[in-house]
Length: 128
Image 1: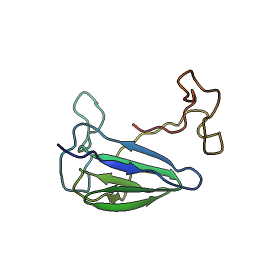
Image 2: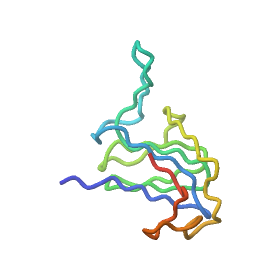
Image 3: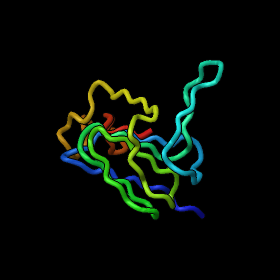
Image 4: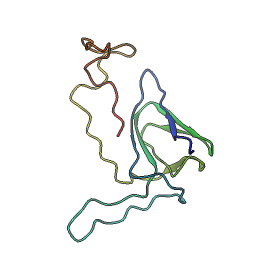
């Protein structure tokens, strides 16, 4: 059984980050290569893996292959659970549109009224 890829997001007081995992995880060599869309104008494709974009703060991504810290403005890529995360020099095609109110609670605890399940109805963080 394969172990899951784990991304630990930390920062002061909250790191705004985006992580995307397209398709199944298979080991491939970095850096990722973005290929143009097909003749129908489809979106560019990226190799499968974990992609991160740090908007504010610092995040740490760790797996059995190693660990890497990513600061605000950096992009990262991890192809699988056994290869270390790497810094990608430019945006590999990540698109992120934060909601109108993002992390307005000041850190810690639920934002807004809690739903019957005890969880907040507001968005604290978005991971795609």
